[in-house]
Length: 223
Image 1 (cartoon, one colour):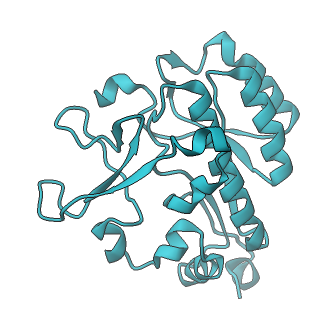
Image 2 (spheres, rainbow, N blue to C red):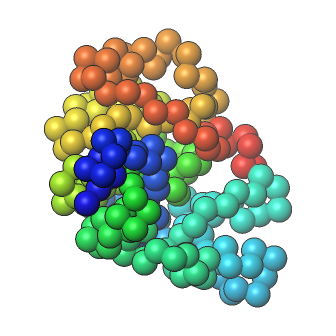
Image 3 (cartoon, rainbow, N blue to C red):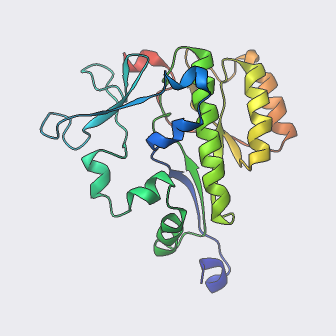
């Protein structure tokens, strides 16, 4: 029995997350597959402790594990992720039944999931970035379709290529996206940049809210 059946009130988690699995990038087109993010395993006895991993993208670590501009993010192979009282399959959405069981356990009726590794600017190459977002959207859209409407998602768009962003928005709307994701900065541009207006106009037409999430959208803060 869900909360709405018990007391007439739905409980919505509007800031859930997915830990991106390596298999997500099987959805990359062939031309970008060789440039896919590579998982890096680190020893657990360093200053990073149980945050012992990163992705390698364009020769850079994501999250940044350097001494300046360091960021953190949970990855599926980190010791930290193994200590959480939620299975890895639930965290990655590879096991949707486990995710739904966790929602029941925490008395959550509906959850909106946001990315984790993409809470930072990850690829300077706009076309690579767009392909990574396309792979993410495809994977998450297919996974959430198995949730009977309880796990919903927001689409990632290549804002630096507005024409491609509008095209991807239309595709993800058909896939069932509930909104579009962005951070407060898109590289060195703020969200009031007129170049982004066509994206906002299309979102309004598709009735997709703009979901602004905390993150390291400008690479200047991670260098």
